[in-house]
Image (cartoon, rainbow, N blue to C red; front, side, top):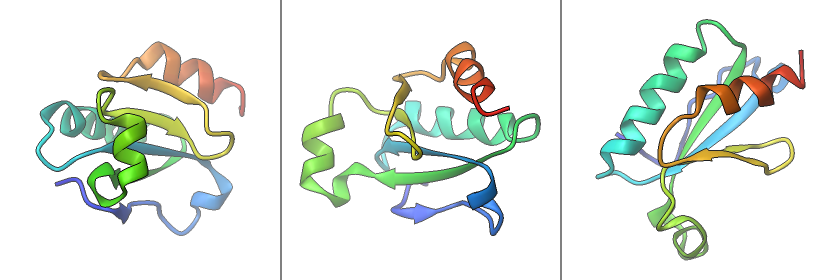
Length: 96
């Protein structure tokens, strides 16, 4: 399910863009992605998913922390392991 892909739609550049770093065989990653897609119904943000196994530097950086939710705007790590809805809300509130 997790691929080195871009799930952002055409107007994502007008929205807050977030990236989930994870890997294919990671149930926590899949849970976070599903929860984020549901959260997109209430908050406007783009979402990109990157498989860390596609890049040795990403494996070194995130291997023990996946899934990791990061802002594309400033590189801030919002949460890891599990989606922290409070942390996500606090981060997105900065841009409203």
